[in-house]
Structure formats: C-alpha cells, structure tokens
Amino acid sequence: MNIASILRNAARTFGDRPAVSIGDELYADYATMAARSAGLAAGLKAKLGLASGDRVLLAMSNCPQYFELLFAVWHAGLVAVPVNAKLHPKEIAWIAQDSAAKVCFCTADLMEAIIGQSHDMPGVWRFVCVDDAEYQRLIGDPVTCAVADRDDLAWVFYTSGTTGRPKGAMLSHLNLQLMAWSYLCDFDRLDSRDAMLHLAPQSHASGLLALPHIAKASHQILPPSGGFDPGELASLVDGNESLTFFLAPTMLRRVVEHGGVARSRIENVRTVIGGAAPFTAQDVRDALATFGPRFTNGYGQGECPCTISMMPKHLYLDAACDDELTSVGIARTGVEIAIFDAEGQPVASGEAGEIAVRSDIVMQGYLNRPDATREAIVDGWLRTGDMGVMDARGLLTLKDRSKDVIISGGSNIYPAELESVMLRLPGVHEVAVVGKVDGDWGEVPVAFIVAVPGMGVTAAALDAICLDNLARYKRPKAFVFVDHLPRNSTGKILKSELRATLSEPPY
Image (cartoon, rainbow, N blue to C red):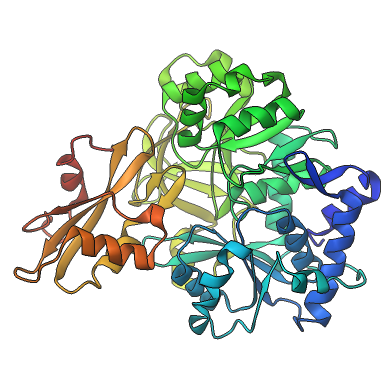
C-alpha cells in the first residue's frame, strides 16, 4: 500500500471538507488537494523526468504547498527528503548530496541561499520555488497512484548524530502507515471535524503526525505568522474547534507566561502533545492548569518516528509524585520497550538503563551507514542511546542521555557537530561542547576551548565560524577558554567535569 492512498481515500468521502488553511484563509479542500497532488505527481515524472525511487529534497519553511507536494512525491513512487528550514545552507547541501536527491523544492525565503550552495549539490539538477509560477506549471493531468511495496522507501528523516554528520533514517511506507495507525489507537479517534495546528516544522514531527489527521480528513491549519506566537495561538484557539497541536517545553513556558491562551476558549482544544525535550513536573502542572485534561506527554525518535511511548491524559489524574508527572508514559500500540544494562541484558523494574525499542515502526536503517545501523539495531532492538527507568506499571521516565545530545527549545544539538566546525579555526587545539541548564530554552550549548598560545583565537572568531557553517540555534551561547580538558585514564574527555564547572549543571 502506498501511503499516498490515505489522501485519496479521505478526498473520496470528504472532498468538500477543508484540507489546508492559513489561519482562516482556505488554501484547498480535500478534493482540491488530492487532485493537485496527483497532478504534481504527473509533473514530477513527465516534466522533471524522475523515476521510481528517486529522492526529492524538500527545503521548505512551513507553507500550504508542503502537504500536497509531500503526497505528490509518494503518489509518483518517489522518496521524500524533508529538511529543517532552520539548517544552514551548507548543512542542507550535505543532506542533498548524501541522499542523492535529484530535485530540490524550496520556499522563496530559502531559495537564494540554497542556490548559492548548488555547487555542493552535484546530483541536484533542478531547483523549484513553490512560490513561483514554475511550480504551478508542473501540475498536469492527475495520474494513477504508483504501486508501492510495504518496504519501499518513503521518507528519509535526517537526524543529527554524535559523529558530527546527520544520519538519514530510512522510513518505509509500512513504517509510516503503522505510525499513523498507532496514533489513532493511542491519542484520539479523529474525524473530519477535527483540526491540527502546525506550530512546529512540517519537515519533522508536525509533518509526520499530520498523516493520521489527513487519513481522517482533519483540517490542517498553519498560523499566518509562519511561526509560533502565544498571542496568535490564543486567537487561533478562539477561532477553531477540536484543535490538536504540539508544544515543546520552551513553547509551553511562553504560553503560560503570556496568559492569553488560558483566557481563550480552551474547550476548542482537543489535544496538546508535549515532546521534543523533557518536561519538568512544574511544566506538567502548568500545562494541566492551562489546558485541563487535554495535555499528553510523549517520547519518540526519528528512528521510530514519533512512536515509542505516550502518557494517556487520564493517568495524570492519578499521578502520585513528580516522577509520574514527568513520565513519558507507556509503550505505544505496536511497540515493545525494554531497559537494558551495558551488557545488553534487561534490568529489573525501577532500575536505570538504556531504552530499547522493538516494533515494525522502527526504521529500516541509516542511509549509506551500515555500521551505524548495526550499532543502532541489535538483535531486532533499536538501541535509542537514551537512559530511562520503567516502573512495575510500565511507566517510562527519561533520565540521563548516554549520547551527549543537547535539547534546546525542543531542537536537538549534537556537540560533535559543533566541535568539528570550531576545530577548523586556526589556533583551536581542542574543543568540547556541553549543555548548560537554561530557564527559557531548557539547555544551551557552552564550548570549552583549548587555544594554541599566541594564535589570537577569540570568542568572536569562534562565533563567526559557527554562524558560517551551522544553523543559528546550534551555536554555543558561551565560549570558555581553558588550559586543558579533563580526561580519564584512557584519554576520553570527561564532559561531566566540564558540566560541573558551570553554575547550573544540566544533569
């Protein structure tokens, strides 16, 4: 089954229902979106010459064209490679090269910068701006949906890794189908009267979680501002019924501080999905005070897209302690969770270990990285690299992270990626990046630098090289110059000691 069929099925029965809007301005109903997707699929094949299995890069800010194009890619039997619009053009170029993308679709705000990196994308022979007439000319007469095997590749989800380069998690049509069905089993029984508000990037969880909503002809709404604003959210809550939306902890704190949503028509909110970073017990209390019994916290990874665990809303009513309030819930439908020790053996309830996941929703592996795939998937279990505890009831609580990922404002920042960039600066001998607790962002990166004497390395120069090669949100918020980095007997840098020198250690 081709995942594109969920749009065709929704349009057949609910063609007159709104599919995508910007605020209260309708972009397309379901009949129109399905027809445009099928017509775009024709253009991708006949006018751009793409063949089954070819990769299509989607370098787009949130926009109404995103969903029709995503489904057009699948309708034509192609593979979508969505990338975060906040990435640096050099990072996007690397993903284009690694994925062997042949065509890149961009929004107008990114087009010039990405074209400027085209020399690093030798395989991409066509760049199309979705805001231009060229995009509209691609739409031809609708074609029949391509036949897809359950194991055919559908989406390559790039998630940064600890090696300094992003890794492409290969998601099949079956992976995406089961992800959507699990959502409908665990979160909500949706129908055409529901709506999903996209406050987070469509290229990531917001786009993935749209699939079960589109399958049930739910209305997809984009904020007119194109971003996240608590005041705008309050207005959108007032103007739409049965809304579902995603909030990272940083976003939730801004909502609580603003206060406008608390005064809006909360009865119009169906579900608030928390995720992307750990919520404190106070965060959860604030969410419940603001939204009532509509908040749920969850845990997932790109490797098991958006589907590892979730906290059923009603279980918050029975939460007896902070650990239960901060739990990321129970195993999702179709998912097994285990906690393993360092030797790969299951630990007893209540003991900490690495979280492992087994499910048909788990990715096929990492594109072009067989060694990384073998490290991640062992004996059928996805080793997440995250540490956690599961109690006797099956409630999972996240603890420390075995990987040094820093989660800032809901976005993952991997120290190795920052370190590799700063080491390019002449005079930088060593560098180590760790996370520091921040009241607004959860964590922020701090870089410890060992500089070669007399080379004149400055914080300004380090900041400049980061800005020239990385997304702005990834760059360190402080640079600490030290004579040496602490190491253990085997020479490994002791980042725990570096964290301890910060005023508020993050763990």
